[in-house]
Length: 342
Image 1 (cartoon, helix red, strand yellow):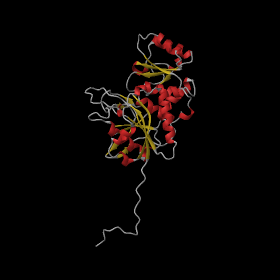
Image 2 (cartoon, rainbow, N blue to C red):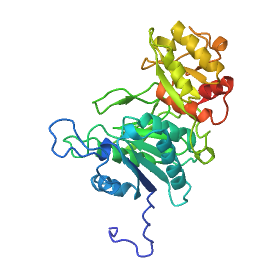
Image 3 (cartoon, one colour):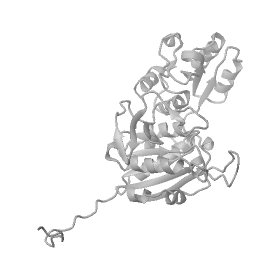
Image 4 (cartoon, rainbow, N blue to C red):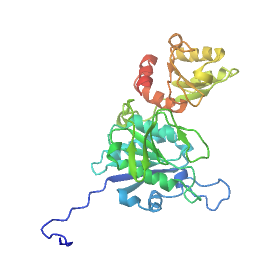
């Protein structure tokens, strides 16, 4: 009968080294406290990153974790300069040989913009995962702990390398590009055509797709201290054209026009945008509609106007890409190529 005792001649297997993940905290609902409120009132960013990590059972078993607080803000206050500051912090962490990946906790209101800026400005192949929640940390049925557990699991997974910035919502894993917040209350608040890459199921990350658009083109280390001003213009048939003139006078170097349908432009607004273009402002056509592309030279002759078509990017991500592209060129033809490939 074989012995059940271990063979003393056989060395014991050493436990596998856990991935080293940095939790970069920016605030948001995921770190919010409702403090017993019976309504939806709460304080975003009230919890520290350490408190968030401590509240998730099993999280420390997945990875060796280190926390770093950058902001403690409602994400509506994470403007473009702060998003660039966040990117610089994440880039510095990724450059550390002792770091295998980064998870960014973030409010959901502007998550799609910050995540896309990270996607475009980080050059490392190490995983970066952005995560938020729709309910504060002390709410009944809080979704933050489960989302954070999934985000760390994805950041620790070898399949996440080389994919750019990812976003975890529930069990779904998305690429940052094309993602959009589509609901103000439901926990499944994000969606996007062609954005789903994987699912977290029964403790495993199941990969189904890989992004093909370019990423990391605008290295955060090479960007100027302040990015060019790009404004959003929500259009309608009776929009006063003085609004366009005011944006130009205010120093806008780019305007993203949110048009009805497939990015259509009312005639009077088109004339005002043409004047802005002659003044050197780059004009990008995007759509107010939640899904579908804005095609170049479709209903609008972009060549004649010297405008750029946003493709399937939301106006909010189009603003991020335009601001970064303007650090390289102000030629609409070159900028159109960035939109076609990013």
